[in-house]
Length: 392
Image 1: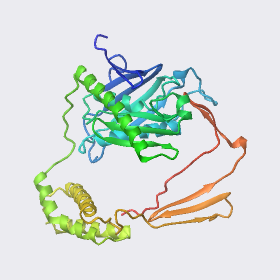
Image 2: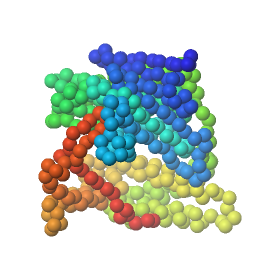
Image 3: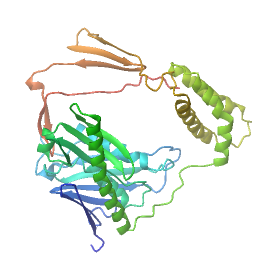
Image 4: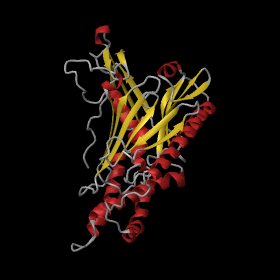
């Protein structure tokens, strides 16, 4: 227990956040306990040493879970056991994932698991705004090649004053509620809601949030150094051939750019033309070629991405011909379904939503049974995405 390391930083109002490593989950690649008031989060990071064959993406899972025992509660319902993640917990998991995923190296493909558990709860220190801080700190004290640190804070405006990581009561009374994610240098994500607000006020809120995040990132750098984890593990998950990549760019970039310049509104036609360039190149290779065709496909994606991006930057038009200040054509229709209580179709370009509304009585309210929140929900939103796109 001599290897326990603890670091503390302060919020603008003087409240303190402490991060400790070396006491719990010592077999994980990285583990920390974050504490603010009586709220405590255990965050762990584990990653495989190697990537599976054929994997060309980052197979990472992020799970945030609020344990009922953290606030001295027993789950409702029949089983009285912890169940699947709630919608709320899944949304917090996504907030963390969305902030940290872009900061892993593009060529890192090892299976990675980030787990954040609320082990002690306090309504004066809401845990959802601390989850990404804890996750990033767990990565900071590991040898996983994460290009952080990052953090997230909640900022609200109450009676004209901005508050970082407010209490539940302050949050519910606020007229602005944002969760901001950032690194030392860049804003990564802004999520939230507010009533009508001036642009200057919004920018001020983001700036104040970023100032608090910088302090938390600095703490993580100190923690990483104290834990001796400034050097990350070496890995080799991709076959690379920079000379071949350059050769492929010279051979195909102009052809791809010309397809992009056609500004075709039909996405399927556009995809077919992009695909034909690749097909023709592969078909032109001799039968005894030693060219790695998987590498060709990978680099072709890079070529297509670069050409499409440069089209927008150079000629100020998008792939479908729209200028940078134009939106897709929008149309809508109501009462499309005769038996539903209410229905509508909303279409923007090639994106379409068919929505229905069902009115219920008080008996249809959803019971909320969570570690930090309970009560009922009068508005229930359910959405899904069906596989309508053709396989190509």
